[in-house]
Length: 174
Image (cartoon, rainbow, N blue to C red; front, side, top):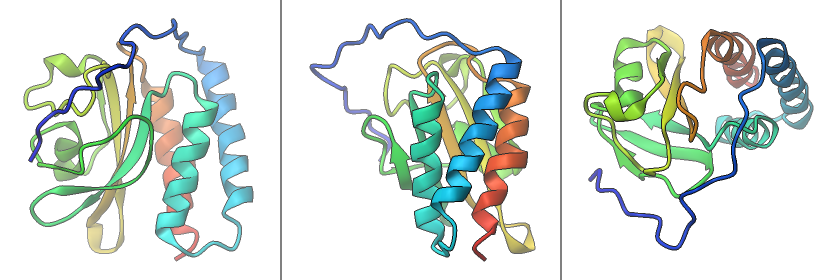
């Protein structure tokens, strides 16, 4: 189920990525929010909103290596819209995404290789942030999963902007 398939033929050495300053991160998220809102105006489909969000975020935030949603099903998480290398189609509730979903709290992992139960869909990922999307009756609908090849790429600014600016956009069509 969670078997990793190596990304053969791809260069494991990526160009150096600079993590933006706090002020720059905030500006990038605000710019992304404006673009997302413009693109999803009058779009009621949750999946379409998710697809737009991951596309815009991955395009605008250079330290994002992989960005996507996993839908919370009863026994596992199922891949939704994403941008980046090929993803695991379904993952258990044991990894970073599952832990964030079970706890209904954003989880920042500076080094995924140190996280017990981490599911490596792409060995080039080194840090991760996962933000639950919680719907009515306090049920997790999905998680927004973002990976970076840079260790410690995500911080409280990412958490705050994703929780307060980006995730609420998913509710606007409902």
